[in-house]
Image 1 (tube, helix red, strand yellow):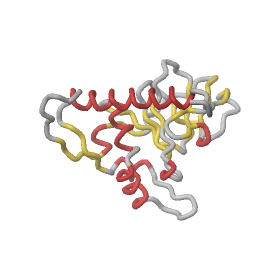
Image 2 (cartoon, one colour):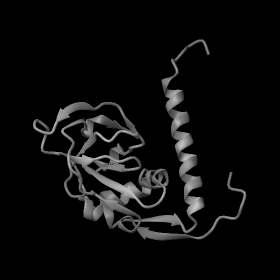
Image 3 (cartoon, rainbow, N blue to C red):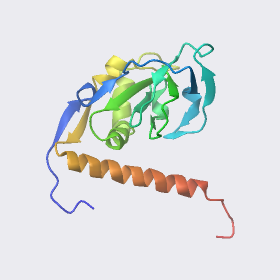
Image 4 (tube, rainbow, N blue to C red):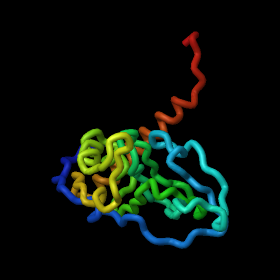
Length: 177
């Protein structure tokens, strides 16, 4: 897949490669995603809400390509890339909403790394429920290829791997295989 010579990589702070917590108006009716709704990199649940009855934490209006980073207990790595064409999903403020200027799947792959989580934990407060605020998260550096095509190739590779893993997890388990 990567036959050509790879280009140089550089250190960039997350705020340089993404917008954090963009402001948006809540729709009147929406699907609410709370901290328990994401496990690993999969959304396992959501619930219908109305603007009038929504929890106060329902603030992050999702747009395709947004990455949601769980700011409480970040070691769980329950982070989600919103890749749906719907405009009515709203995430809890327990997530930092990251809107990348670069490939979203590439960003997701970097923030899921053990070394990134270690940087987050070093900047987190609290012991039982360590948490990081969005500004401190945005200030963490990641390494990215200078070449945009290389970023996309890496992001595409991780997207395909995620889909393959999901397919295998959905297959029924059999003792006879």
